[in-house]
Amino acid sequence: MKYLPVIPLTAENFRQYGDVIELQDQPSFQINYGMADRHHAQAKVDVRDDKGYPVISLVHSKKYELPQKIKIVERHPLGSQAFIPRDKTAFVVVVAGAGDTVQASQLKAFKTNGEQGINYHTGIWHGLLLTPFDAMSFICVDRDGSGENCEQHHFSEQDQYTLDIKV
Amino acid sequence: MKYLPVIPLTAENFRQYGDVIELQDQPSFQINYGMADRHHAQAKVDVRDDKGYPVISLVHSKKYELPQKIKIVERHPLGSQAFIPRDKTAFVVVVAGAGDTVQASQLKAFKTNGEQGINYHTGIWHGLLLTPFDAMSFICVDRDGSGENCEQHHFSEQDQYTLDIKV
Image (tube, rainbow over all chains, first blue to last red):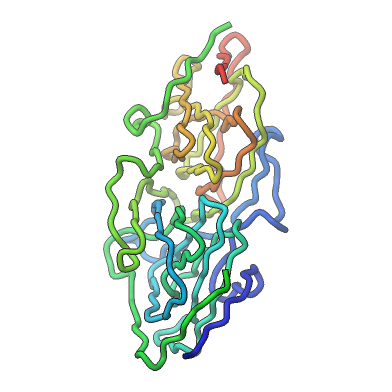
């Protein structure tokens, strides 16, 4: 069995895959006459074509049992995709690189700190959003519109990594 | 003193001003092989010009003391603006109509149910986001880029409505 290590998510180690959306260590400016702080543009919503437009959706994810085999990754060639939790619960983000092909050896797994959201950059291969600590609700910001914006890659059984975490 | 009534927010009574973002009574479809429900496209992110692009920001708002006078409204002519709370706390949304001019008599105030977020449609005059029940964090999705995307209107003292709520 090949185990995929899970490391804590930071803006730094996620930079090549996307943005980390969180309040900590971010500059902010005051709005509303000093009554609110705006931590501006933590992620840019990218929609690449004129048939698409960004939408805000809500996603409710069930609790996953561990261990989980990483059988599949997908990518969205026409736009970015953000998931920001409404619950203060950690979740696990699995990504691989960009590019037309993807190898299981490229997989990386990150555990959020219970505050962080993420924004996959356009075209980044990523696994299903894993919520092993509890059922969770997310705000999702991604592309809608005509055109094919989801490609999937299935790993052969021998290539599949297993993800486990001591909860 | 002119008091502005505050009524419960629904998708129906907010329709002419924008979208209500909430899980209740919305159709959903399964994603991630049945592990998640997606309540799709509760709001469309609108960016009107090619110098702008949508961004995801975090906004932390202090607790407001009531009563509050509604002294000012603003509008964003180049894009929509969504606020979705991360906290399960109600807040108050103040809006007026669209159009180049705005009158205090057009003001409406809505109280959310603690789950709802909102998306102001492009050009809708709205008040400052009022958080009288607690300090709150919001995910904000709106336009960034060059160009003038914020117009303000100050009501004269005699035109100012007062907002109060029995907490």
